[in-house]
Image (cartoon, rainbow, N blue to C red; front, side, top):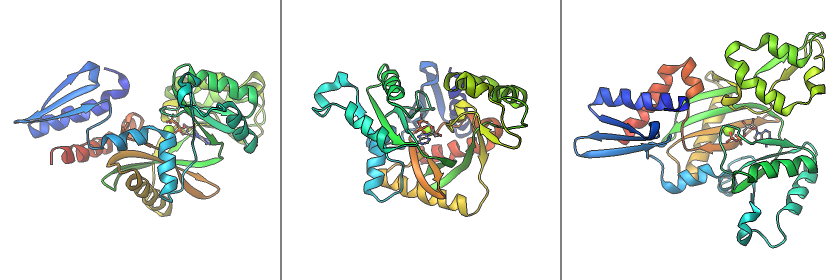
Length: 314
Ligand SMILES: Nc1ncnc2c1ncn2[C@@H]1O[C@H](COP(=O)(O)OP(=O)(O)O)[C@@H](O)[C@H]1O
Ligand SMILES: [Mg+2]
């Protein structure tokens, strides 16, 4: 079983034991058969079967999600869709390259280029030049059939809301790993000296992949804060921090509920970003992955899956 799937599988097994449900785990933990009396429910991947097929597909598609949210008046990060030229029959006759270059020139702060159906921050590139765009597009199309381009936004905070039928089960902020300069040590020296051991292997490889020698060796001015990864993915070393009750939490939950209703999804993780003080939806994940949070708050994660399973067996 993959490490990243353990808590989900563990939560289902525990629920089964408590409720007289036989749980059979197949396909290295990806397929779970739950049987109580004559009724059988299936779970696959991180999917408990609560979401409709179309809600699941739209959530998985960043550009379709942005389209539906925009149509519904829900503030969101725009995601323009481009298909791999291998799918030429479905691509506009003028091709995609010119339109991609236009997006680049319209966004002087850069653009985020990512697999349209990606997760976990894999192959998400920050691009600010035509050669950088060519490289990113090449890398994404090597293993994905489509990509999405958004304007690069200065994200002040990213919050995840896990919703079940419009009720928030988990609300947490994702804190990117960062260092504070001392006017003496370089970014790399500070990272090596201050990153907790359990974060190093997630953070350092991405720093080396993304920053050149000059950036790694530059001395960080005293008191200056530098994030070590521009992305908020927990898999890349960001840390979940539960959001206190208050204005920010209320705003995120309200926006998440509007987003979930717009695409008709019941159980989902909705990622919301604050840009220039305003909140907007970045993406919706129809699978609720909680590995990072479960290390800090296993009881909350179990309670969230328990609530979802109660709906499944209601
Ligand atoms: N347009 C953007 N501007 C700034 N940062 C972005 C943008 N899009 C994505 N990111 C950063 O990249 C991370 C991963 O992007 P996301 O769209 O969530 O893809 P994934 O499904 O791979 O997590 C986000 O958590 C965010 O930190
Ligand atoms: Mg994400």
